[in-house]
Length: 381
Image (cartoon, rainbow, N blue to C red; front, top):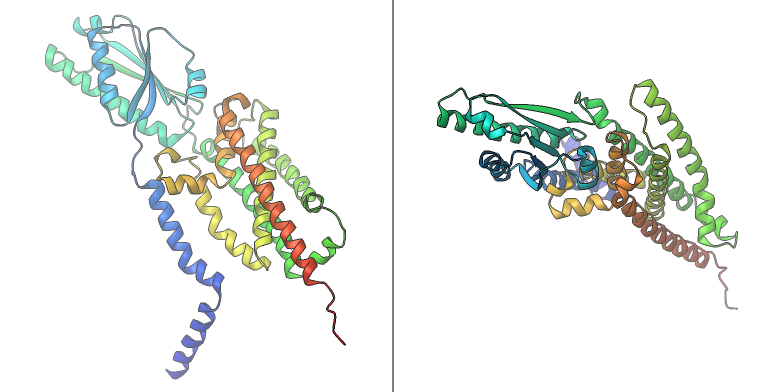
């Protein structure tokens, strides 16, 4: 028993003396728990934007519109009276569904005939589309029941037809494909580049870089170019996977390559920052282990980030993963173009510039401090 107690005391000292171990075991669960609660605290998706095309413009169609607006899961962005390009509205305005109320809607119901209400749902995000579909179905079913009570006729007078856009089969592989590709690419770039810069400190080789007598930009580019080339090779491998796993290839390949390039460079500067802040490769890997998973959770790819609390939204905005993966979904699943993701692309550029400047400042400081530390010591005689 004494030996066990001695071992416990010994291990406790080792544990409390290792900052990284304490952060991983204590800080990790705290951070993950807080972020998980901050992301999913609302528990449900509400006020999903939809549009209504009311071709009947009758009291009954107005009642249906009011009921749709009153449903907590929906909010009507605007009501039109003529047909419109639904897919364009999905891409430009972030519409999640379009409800078509046909001509003679009220007349058909009053006279005991069937009337069809067509609904087009943006199925790019299976989570959001599920909530929207259930909300619209509940509203139409309620109106059916009300009409049945008033007329004394069967409660199936209104036929709801649902047409799913972009991912009509609700294929889960197609849904998660962009997010998995992006998170893998982010993880390997962050870790490898961080390890590269941390190894300079670990092996005390910054003096070699300082002896080159060149500016920090040249040093950064000299170290990062090789990783950018390898990352481009990874994109080629990803292209092969599209065919191997029978996924639809992006329509706008150039646009996809542009945002992928910005993403790779942004993440590489993030990795550079992490590598410069830690003195060993092991510590920077342990640090990044804590950060990467919450970045995926707060990205808004599956659970819309607009329903996160502000700390979770802020955390997600710190990573290039958020704008990249959401823009990639529009390019791959919704067949959009760079013009359709200009907000995400702009955010990517802002992040790139910000992390570039931070990385250069830290590198400059590191080189300057290393240079001072290597000055010969003059001994007074």
